[in-house]
Amino acid sequence: MAERLNKLFRYNLTLIRFISLFLGRFDIDSKIFHYCNAGHNPPLWWQAATGSIKWLAPTGPAIGLTPAPQYSSNSLQLDKGDLLLLYTDGLIDARNTRGEEFGEERLLAYVKDHINEPVEDILSGLRKTAKRFAGSFQDDMTLILFSLK
Image 1 (cartoon, helix red, strand yellow):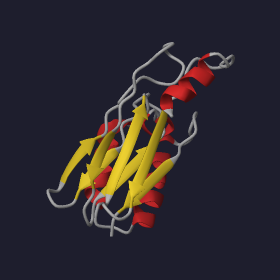
Image 2 (spheres, rainbow, N blue to C red; image 1 turned 90 degrees about the vertical axis):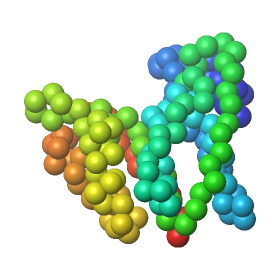
Image 3 (spheres, rainbow, N blue to C red; image 1 turned 45 degrees about the vertical axis):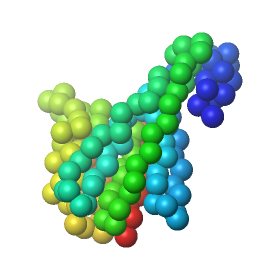
Image 4 (cartoon, helix red, strand yellow; image 1 turned 180 degrees about the vertical axis):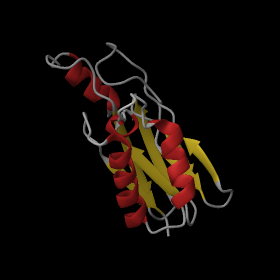
């Protein structure tokens, strides 16, 4: 799908140069999450069993950057309590009055500090924390949180 989208957008992009995108599919029976990350910010995967966090690195370039890119897919075996957080660059690029970015380190610290809260509270708290940090946003901020109960 990413290769087809690249072909379509490569010849139709006029106002923008590229598009990052994250495609994911969750198999509810096997609890396997399959994904392709086309140059998007790396989603954060909290593994409840080990208490560790991993970043889901891109599996190919952003859509529109190259004529014939190669994309691959990866998969994760999710377990009870695992959490996936997808976000746009509006969150990590948000800057405070001193010009500091919210960044991945603050995002990581927030998730670690609030991992045991309900999903809705993590999302709303993260939005409030970023807003307090930056005051306002120059870019969109989209958050998607997926948790396996």
